[in-house]
Length: 222
Ligand code: G3P
Image (cartoon, rainbow, N blue to C red; front, top):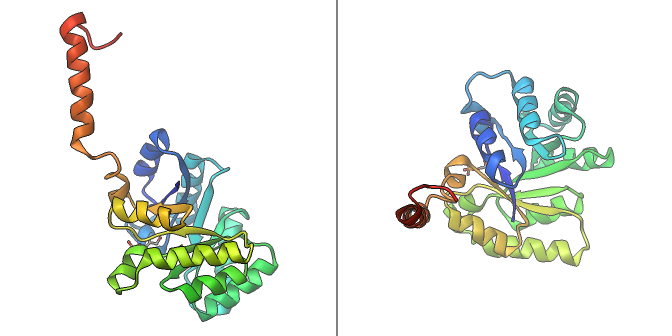
């Protein structure tokens, strides 16, 4: 499982890079809103410095029309860097923009994927990543794991380089199931990342080991 952080919170990202195999960061307007009235470009550049410039940074366009999406993509690349993955919702205008931008060699993450046909079309257009929305699919009574598995099979069948970056998680179980179904990458928000190691039994076991050593050696180190 290749982990990407679905957050723009500087403190959390700084914390995660210390102990997690973080491969990148994804943002969208709702995620950025949580950070208040930030200087967009400066904030994203700070995140890039924290994760390392060899890691992937995915930034979403705002405009809803084809021309506007192209303009946003150009602005993101100019302000943040040409190697930024431009996140574009896979709707009609989004797919048109993906087609144009991929022809120019721009890195693309097709997002807001609620169904297989969106994913299959974005794969045909050579999007680098597909972001199926796991929890949101479940809420709509779509089995996200079956969808991911079918999307994965289509990628294999067509010998595509496109990767699945599953998104929209509300618990750890969803993350593991999406990964098992074929999502090589997962992008996970801070509430769920914080739950990865939250099992109280882990720290209970460690405390017990340390106390047993201390009982004999009277110190908490070797
Ligand atoms: O990366 C997409 C994701 O942020 C959407 O997640 O939690 O709003 O369904 P959520």
